[in-house]
Figure 1 (cartoon, rainbow, N blue to C red):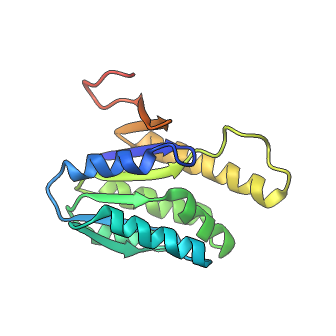
Figure 2 (cartoon, rainbow, N blue to C red):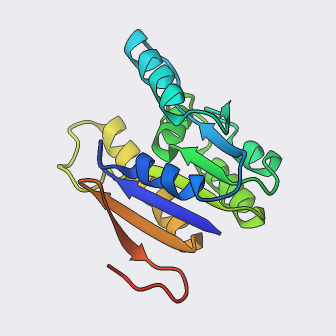
Length: 173
């Protein structure tokens, strides 16, 4: 099963996803896509690792997310987050279309539960520069493709999970 969890900054999306993962038998795989570009980001990464606690196998995968998903086998996986992965691809001048297809292929082949967290960046104003507009557009396309593949899509708002695409037998909120 694939579940996509979207939301804005500090909307509760990661906390929600971690709760869903913890309900599954461990150990759980946490695929972290963020990179510590400065001291503040390193502090965030360290704090998040400590808050997650025991039971997690954390792997840093700023680019090679599709391979890490394949390597996880049947374990429950939490990817946090898709938009940081996209940022890494964009700044590294990688082929985003090819990377997206590789990700979709890896997700479709996964035997275990996979939760993917992403920032919904398309609800704000139109960015004032080309790079920011490209990022917003690429994030929207990436999320649409994953949502189409996903069994469930949840939007978090103010810590409240809203089911946008329910699994079979589950109602919308």
